[in-house]
Amino acid sequence: MDALTFLREDHKSVLGMLEVLDGAPSGEGAQRSGLETMVTNLVIAESQHEAIEEQFFWPAVREVLEDGDELADRAVKQEQEGKQLLQQLEDGAPGDPEYQDALQKFVALGREHIAFEQEVVWPRFEAAVTHERLVELGEKLERAKKIAPTRPHPDTPPSAGVLKMVGMVTATMDHIRDAATGRAADNPPDPQVH
Image: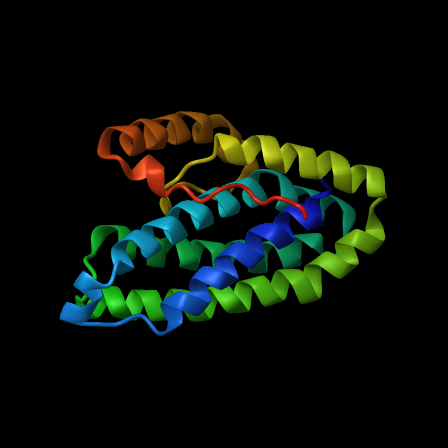
């Protein structure tokens, strides 16, 4: 599967979660609603997605587009803001005002970030690379997602080199913690092309 198809399927999944979470109940209703499980799914999906983009997609954008550094910097800045919000969700509890605030901020930021990627970056990137390059990049993204971190790690620098070096250890620790706590069952499936 080519990179943009893979990322688009990931985005569809996340946008579906954001749609549900946009009207999430607050207060005591949030604790009874299953909100925590849905947010855990979101945290896992977004943590994996952003990690693989920062390792492989944004370096490719930097390499092939004249203003690739500017585009990638803007996207990575949005991703870092998102990781901070996801960490607040990881640390918080449904119904708490700070949790609900972080959730609503993430819903808005997530939509803005996806629109930026799909409407601004992807068309230009697709025009600048061969189909073979897109397929090769897509294969890297698919492989990387299977072993990507499942938690936000906002303090890890969003550099491809650092993520490739430290990411494997971080991801392994995430997967061990997920298995030990039963959180692994909440891991959303990888995108499938229909």
